Length: 327
Ligand SMILES: [Zn+2]
View 1 (cartoon, rainbow, N blue to C red):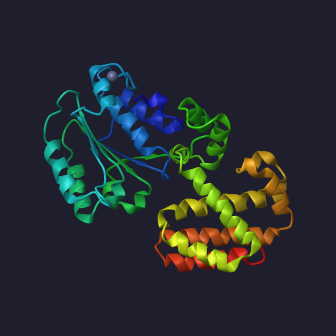
View 2: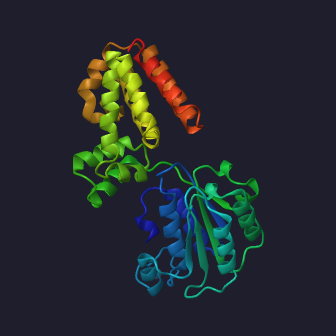
View 3: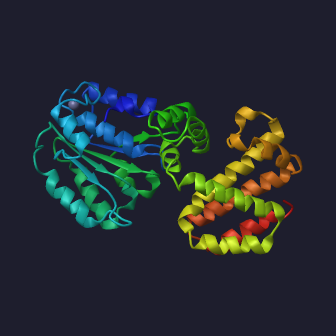
């Protein structure tokens, strides 16, 4: 996989490729940024580039190593991922063992430790020992949503690669190049995903994001009607489907955000849910600015509480009552 084919992240790609061109490759890198931004994708492309036989600053895609990398059978590339919820000590011990061997085919070995923040305390301490005295010709690429969830002593041994949002147009192009939905859907997903190509990609999956979106609008209709007992029943239903809740709240948030922006600017180019513009015009008209701001704050608060595992059902019930109030 070539780095040139990874969308977005212009600056981080340039920094990595310059380091390679100037022979200043660090022992360890930590790719961090929001879920779906492309941390593992970029780390994999960088790993491939580090291993490629041609060594031209990007993977050539044609040498024997690049071909084996693409097929997933290169013995000098190791992917460490959580087993269940965590990366366990046994996995890091295994890594420690293989790290002492010489590279097999390439001139170096690369370990990609995906979701490094899921390492158990023992696993993290074991990795720290390896990073303190890194074996020769071995490079570690870690990915994490938030570096603060890792041991500071691990973070300080890594060069940080910060990944920010990807421009909407690049995501749109990427979706249509890969036949993820018709052109209209590609535009919609590229706006809804908020700069996260991984999210747009999974939303394009049948039965995924767009279905969640339908659910969000059904919920919104009930909020509008102020149908309290229906809303409380919904909260009960969502309790059984906890995993979709962050996405439901995210999309609900974008919808209230759109109403506020439309009310204040009437500028179509600033709207995310572009396919719902007519509904947006009618709905934002009779709502107060202060109600919309308050609703946004309430959704944000619920998102935060759910991410902290505060009482799920209660959080949702309170949110729905608050949103239905004066809706
Ligand atoms: Zn190559």
